[in-house]
Image (tube, rainbow, N blue to C red; front, side, top):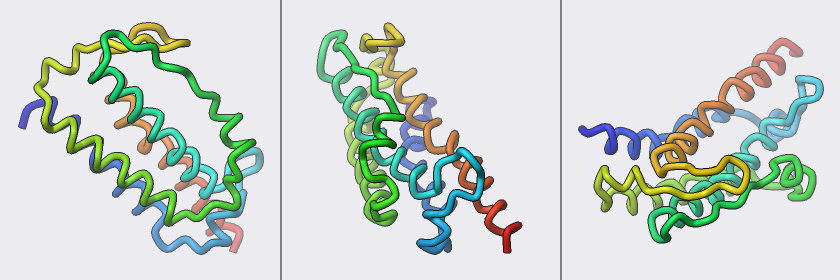
Length: 158
């Protein structure tokens, strides 16, 4: 398997890691904020669900446009304005899975040289497709320790 194929598979497998991290959590546990000043587990899942389409759009734009402008997004505004505590965790997980499944299918039709294509992010400047895809691959694993921290705090509170 090439490095490009491994990157695509890592991207496609991310939702399984997230689903495993929240498996068995009750609605009450998903909504709890056991760590002061931190998001609930549901809020973390919603954050990921909101940013997956943004990351997918950036990748699609880089695949289809010549040096497209890629807009930034403020996660704090999303958290404050998009009803994270009222959303359905299963719906959010399915959205993440479908977004990644669709994009992985598209990426599998491309060749490794596609990774050198460039988009221009409004805050970060030039980003190669490889960098954007790597960022997308790292997004879910980045948040898993935060979920684990919440689960540990909930267990300790029992």
